[in-house]
Length: 141
Image (cartoon, rainbow, N blue to C red; front, top):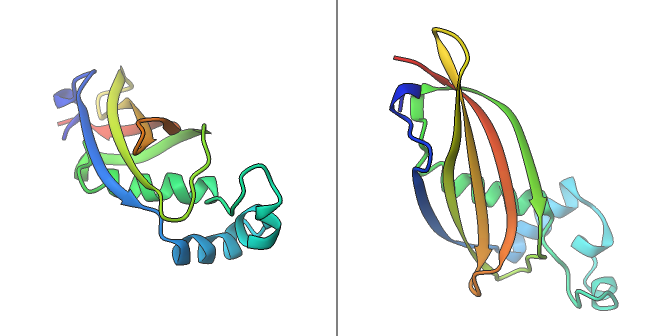
């Protein structure tokens, strides 16, 4: 969708997304190799009681699901920034859902604009597990 076609407040939902233990462990061992993500015996001694998914894995699972519906499509020029807040631990086997909303639009120049996208992911109890704000450069028609 071209920048001029975007509307603040436009929202899409997506999911369910299942956090698979094998994928979680593989990701953790490669990118977040710390005991709370990789050592089940250690994790049992923490207040979480079990290993938790690395936050970036959770975000990337949510992002991959969002991209199946993607507001911008081929008109996306580039991402400018992403800020993620992790609000609640995610465990292997958890099912999460997401909602993406265009919150702001900024005219940049004759060729493109900046769209601000807010993503909220939540669990089966509708408790937020993460929030992300993405600034995306989007082509004008």
